[in-house]
Length: 90
Image 1 (cartoon, rainbow, N blue to C red):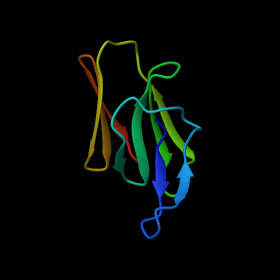
Image 2 (spheres, rainbow, N blue to C red):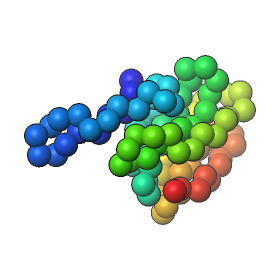
Image 3 (cartoon, rainbow, N blue to C red):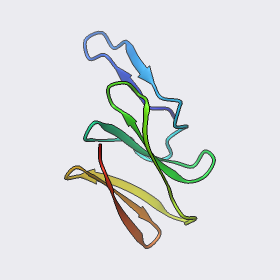
Image 4 (cartoon, rainbow, N blue to C red):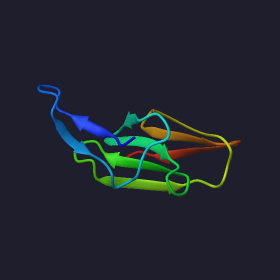
């Protein structure tokens, strides 16, 4: 699954982000980024610019069995087993 941005008027594709691999979590919006967890190569959190689809941020996660992501208050919160990280949002 690759995040895409579509035009709200005609539904045409504005961008598809393949630069940060595929998303294995929900795709969430916060700040000017589109956030997701990816397990394509190693487990990491990706954010792409909502306007362009260009990669903006990647955070590598330690090995863990369970991952989750939530956004709010201009932060991205990542659960990695018992570890909770609050990442800055751009």
